[in-house]
Image (cartoon, rainbow, N blue to C red):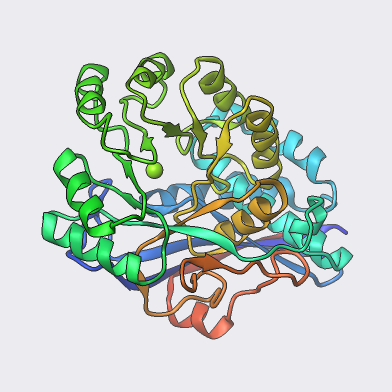
Length: 370
Ligand SMILES: [Mg+2]
């Protein structure tokens, strides 16, 4: 079925993070924004996707509206592999890790939603999965300025039923405070590429006996795969991947011996097909996959489908915050630390139009055949 129109829109959802808001890329982060991509076909079906994200949304939206959407109109929405090849090749000179690949990810997720709707199958089934049970989630805490807030939010997350908790802090003291508050619940530490290798060695050595479940992105810059690999001698499992460009980015990490745990991010690396290839590569190399999924829209739902179909005993990242409302409720909210996977066709959950309208930010852009 031919693609007849593509729309991009943004919803901005108020949230409470259990402490003062932080800034992100120089902007106050007090709304959870979702860049939605809607793809329509000539038979009237509609597919939904989500493109990364955060402060990059205006740039990603412009990439879709100006370049990607016009390239998509008139193509057969079922030709997912051929479209991947054509669009990513057409835009490769514009960047292999950034707005164009992020934008295409949103379109590609919508193509899988359409494929599922057209065939009456959930995406986990299209990927060969069996009917999933509940998936384990981990609470991915935001950054807090005080140890008290770290401890408070760790306790709240444990009480909410999470059986693993990740910090976005950068000191060993935060880890020790969190572990004390967490009791027997394991703690992970994500420092978002905070350290050059010498400092990263100092920090990893200091925490080597603390029992961290993993240490995420300890090295700046994220391309320094040899620097990251050198940290493995401290014995803490290392994770990375949310800033990696596609399959060959993961191959580079794996070939360098840099990671124990791979964290592909479906809204960043080009969508579901590329994520599936990365999971197979990781599994063939004995690398655990723990998806990067701090999202609350179709990118999150797509992660559930992929993980359910392809990852044994997956652990799903859920940002620790309380949203006022979400157009994809209830699927984006864990219960007792576990997530249900939709079993309707495609993603299995279209957004609630009333919530989309209430929290719309900026204008919807529609691209259609001339
Ligand atoms: Mg991270």
